[in-house]
Image (cartoon, rainbow, N blue to C red; front, side, top):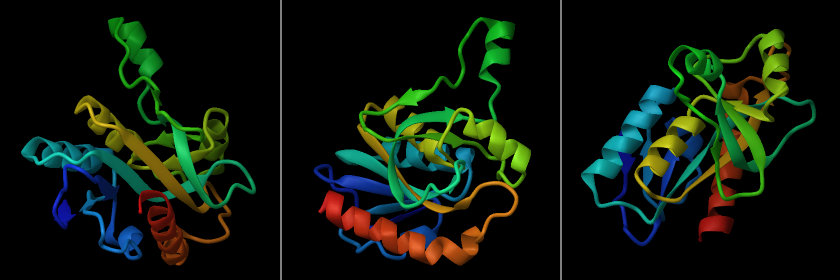
Length: 190
């Protein structure tokens, strides 16, 4: 976890998993690098928000794999799911709902978040029945921010097609994704 810049209570905090995704953010807003995965993301966001000062809002920017052929570009997320938490089974065991879908105030796509890197075609097909994109941090960031009572936006740029046979790997596409995310931030958070 690393916070770059100082949090301003009147401005948003940008949250990204790794430095490679933040290379084209212009430095006008503080950036929290959480590390990859749900635990790192939730822990970093909760820690920064608890320490204060608190930002006006949080914007999670990052890369995501496309679960549907031809899906490309930068997308705001409307609904977030955890794809590696068996909420239905847990509900039958305890009667409680753990990890319900999160609905954000946005028009956009459905994002499935999980610590499992989706590199198998069968996993991609299964997830494509419920979601458009897949990542490793979005749900955790949004959950921590919402629990703290702040507004949150989740914006992802497609880095590759999830599953086997991806045309390019994350490492090959992350520079272009970072450029697109920087442009989105300048145009939408000015």
